[in-house]
Image (cartoon, rainbow, N blue to C red):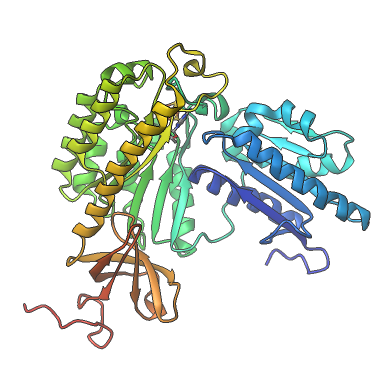
Length: 467
Ligand code: 5AD
Ligand code: SF4
């Protein structure tokens, strides 16, 4: 409880689009507003404050935002007609990129705030209630944001996210992140470790370290020396009660020896890695300013697999980047065949205003982009199905995260991030248990609790394996 009683409690509706960084940021915004009496609600109707946390990466981000803002204008007017107010805020990367445009096209928006100014939300809310026009805060002093955010208050549950790094200096030709999230910044190791301990104390058993370029992490450690992500992972793995660690999103260029070694040496580091490659053609990779070739990416994959033979990979791909020929695309397909991905996200190239690729000559025709994306997705889907099927019959360690969809069912997560459903008592939630996988579905697995360490024979659906 925050000490606010029901009469003064204000309703906060947060809508989040996009990446896990945004999900994390939304939770932090809820945290900074909690002392002001704001508690989260499930719908915008009746809310005292609505925050739309936006994402600029996907297509039509601003159109989606403006249509949502149109609906909210009506809600806000209805509330004002009954003498109540609604503070309307737009946060995230669209706010960062299009702040002035938002207040011009949607003057009923009260606050526009970029990703680095969330700690100033309470002050902005106060100013918005006095100001005639919108309050716009889109500066980028990222260090201040982390210094001023309150210590995490709400439990995130069994699986939690922890932002360790923000921003990006890589300037890939197609990407808005360096413009919207600003320069790379790593949080000091002490702050990260303290937050991880708090998350574990609040019940987290798996932590995913977040950053746009997470493996470029170089936070200040004890004595002022920078720690790499590998070093940080080794430290976090020592926290009692923390069973699993992951990190996302990585850049192939930043997979250093120490991080690869951590995959070999740290059992808590899960054998699953999201490593975007975008294309399999050296020509396109150069045009994208990725700073590596296809062969260099494959060499990293080989080293990772050597370090951790059960490692599964996921990736991001763009079909139809400017200048991509059908031969270039064939090389992307060949790279996918060579690697074999457990999962992947693939996108049709779509120009982002202000990025170099948007103004590049030789834009690929829409029909061609569509055809390539379809072919790529068919192959990736096939690989995902194969990977899921390859788990059938195995006993895998599943971290139980909460109740499943049906009574008596529990949901969990495999080491490879697959959702797993099984019949098990809810008391086991929070534990890693052995599960025999019986069936693979398009996006999940199902199985039975297997006999094993810590599982009473009475709960197991299986005979113990012979010694
Ligand atoms: N067009 C298509 N896909 C893009 N991505 C980023 N920018 C664009 C764009 N302009 C994809 C990349 C990135 C993922 C998060 O989104 O694959 O890795
Ligand atoms: Fe964008 Fe490239 Fe930075 Fe990733 S590495 S956030 S794709 S600029």
